[in-house]
Length: 300
Image (cartoon, rainbow, N blue to C red; front, side):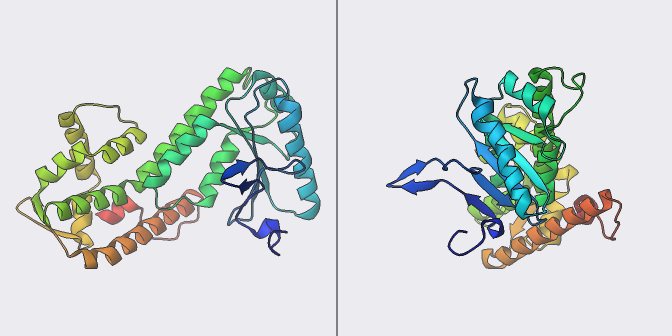
C-alpha cells in the first residue's frame, strides 16, 4: 500500500525515495519500479549499476522471485524489465538458457533507455500497447542457441528493433511536429512569410535537425537540410494540413497565420485527430477495420 492506495493501482511506482535532495536506492525485497499499463499489464523493473559477475545473482534472479510473489496476488499479464549499463555475456547466457517461458526478461542498456527518452519531446501520444509490443519484442526468451548464439547477435537484433520502433514513432509524430514548427516560425516572422523563408528557417533549427536525426537522416549542410525538409513537407502535404485546419492561409506561395488565440484550440484538436487516426491504423493492422483512413490519406 502507498498512502492507502494498493501499489498495483498506481500507474508508475518507484520504490526508492528522495532524502535531503539525494536519491536513495529502492530497498531489497521487491522490484525497483512497478508500472501498470492501461491494458492491465504489470511491468516489474530492476535497475542496476552492477557490472560484476554477481549481476545475475544479485539482480536478475531476484526479479523472477518478485514476479512469482506478484503472480500469487494478481492474474495480470506481466513483463520483466532489467535496465543496466550493458548486458554481461554470462548474464545473457543464463537468461537465454534458463528463462521461464511465462516470465521472460527484457533488457535495456542505459544508452537504449536514453534513446527512448530522446523521442518523447516529439511524440504527443505513445500508446501503451505499442510500448508493450516493443518490450515483448526485445525479450530474451529461451530461444534455441542457434537463434542468438551469443550476446553480440542478440544486441544487434535489440539495437535494430529499437531503432525501427523509434523511427516509426517519429514518423507518426511528423505531421504535428512540422505543422507546429511552421506555425511557430510564422508567428516569429510577424504572421506571414514566403514558403521558402519558412523552409530556410526550419533548416537552421536545431530541434528540427535532431528530429530528422531520429528519422535516420545524417548530419548535413544547411542547403541539404533544406532539400530534405522541402521533400518532407511536400510529400506529407504539411502545408495543405496547415490550410485545411485553418492555421494559415496560402496564396501565391506565401503563408499567412491565423491569430494565436484561435490556433491553440486548433492545434489541440489536430493532435487529438491524428492520434485517433493512429489508433485506426493500429486496429486495421490487427484485422479490425473500423473505417476512416490513416493520417496520410486523411491529410489529402
